[in-house]
Length: 300
Image (cartoon, rainbow, N blue to C red; front, side, top):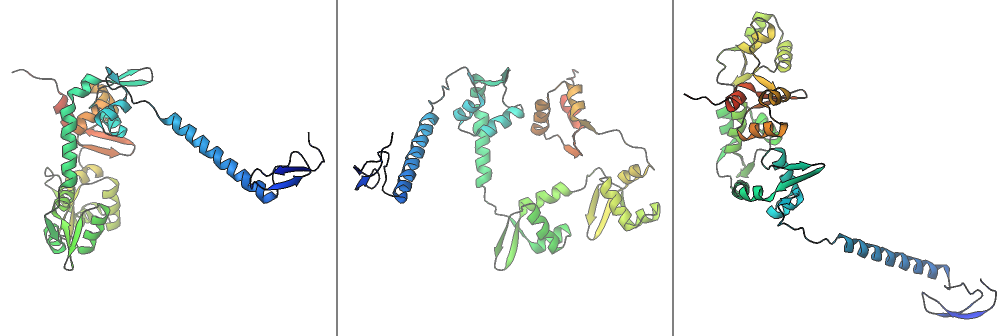
């Protein structure tokens, strides 16, 4: 209970002696009270942070158990948890699921030690391998029949390494060759239309041809300034040739036919380099190569 008497007190913040008119008065001014409040809040925050840090200090996990969680496996192998979940998704690491828990047998991980060591070494060698072979811009133009502005545009879009020396631009030979190899036409395609032939046969304008080949994903090749389109694919899309047998499985069809999980299917496709294509929201996997890989063994 406060009173109206004069009483000599010492300030809590500035430590000065003053005459107070209430027993509840603690500070000599509003500024003094404000400084004391800020100091009190700062100390509370420090205590709160120390409390949180104390809680966050956990005892190291026991890695000698028979079964480990993905986080414990990541710590055991000294790699990120994201990599562990990627291995699980691709079927590289076998897991046991109990209710909502994912467990991994330690013995399985120990059996795969050589695999993880080899992958780390491969990654390290790829990262450290210097680029020593280069094309000049003129050499790229001559070899692949493209113009200079196109080279700079594609190189920027596909992150093709380059360097400069004495006013010339040099492009990584390995990366440039890989890009054009990916764009190379299918060697099984032997017959081609040029735009003039398509105009004459189908009565199409140039803009209609470009829209048609883009919409139907018609394979093409470029020779100098001339562009050619696969005759077989154009005829099928135009309805003048019978459609070929589907060459792809959807993921659902492949899972049902070969009795595989989605993770197993993607692991096989990645490990054995089986071609995949994206059609809208569907992923299609090469039918002939998947059947060749998973066909029943034959004797004799």
